[in-house]
Every structure is written in structure tokens, then in C-alpha cells.
Image 1 (cartoon, helix red, strand yellow):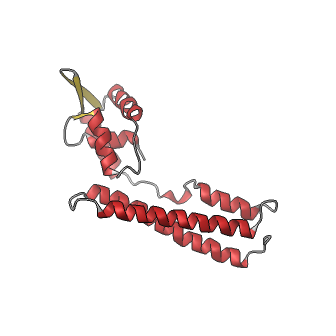
Image 2 (cartoon, rainbow, N blue to C red):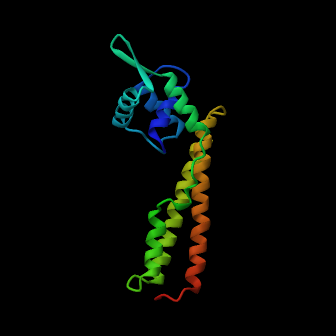
Image 3 (spheres, one colour):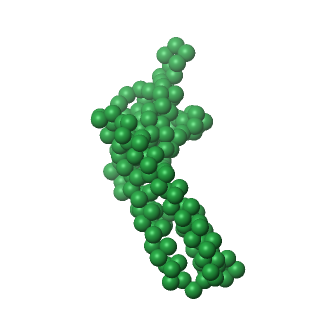
Length: 175
């Protein structure tokens, strides 16, 4: 996720206070990808330095708005194809692959327990996302899209765990 571009996107409709950016982002992602205050302020400083954001001082409150260059940067990012996550680093995949590939780590029962524990964790997480989505307002399309993506990834993980389990049934590793 690009924090830089997300913050630019949060200013698309007009000037925004930094704290409101954080609140809006957390609401948009239903808290799945929380931003901390430091990320917001550091990113805003960089965006100002790069001429993509201007600060508007209103009394003791600072609001930030896109410059023309900032809007152009945001538009380019929105139109650019995001590389598919096919090579994404995934700790669980590496953990299981190493346990299968290394003779010293091969233990079918241990792997089955890991797969079952992971399946339970993914199922619980998927149920949580389903509850979050049920609480959304009808017009909260942005948050619904984020929750749909997270749910699809968890569903795919459950399918993959079933495949790992099938592979373990025919695997020649230690029992």
C-alpha cells in the first residue's frame, strides 16, 4: 500500500486536517490497515517538500490541500496498473515450504497441526470481516471494497490450505 498516494487521495475533495486524514483512512479500511500519526505527518512533510501538497494555516489549525502537481501525481497513480501480488512474501507459505523442503524439519503431524491452526485462524478472521461488512452503511462502498478484498484473500488462503493438506496426504515426509 502506498501511504503517500493514499494521503494524496484523501485530499482529492479539498483541504483536510491531518487528524481527519487518519480517521478517514482508518474508516475506509475498517481499521485493517491503520495509519499511525507519525506516518501521516512524516508523509505530509515529504509531500510538501516535493511540491505535491500545500499547507493552509487557519488560526492554530493546519489544513493540507493538493497542488496541481499533487493532483497530477494522484491521477497517474490511479491510472497505473498495480503489479499483481503473485510474488508477495508470505510468511506462512515460506514456513510450510521450508518445513517440507528440509529433511531436518519434515514432520507431517507437525505440519498438519500448523495447517489446521492456520485454517482456524483464517476462518475466525473471515467471520470477523463478515461481521464488519454487515455493520457498514449502504453507501460505504470504499470500506466494502476493502473488506471484500480482504475476505477474498482469506477465502483463497483457506482453499490453498486445503491443497496443502491434500499434498500432505501423499507426502513422503516423516509421520
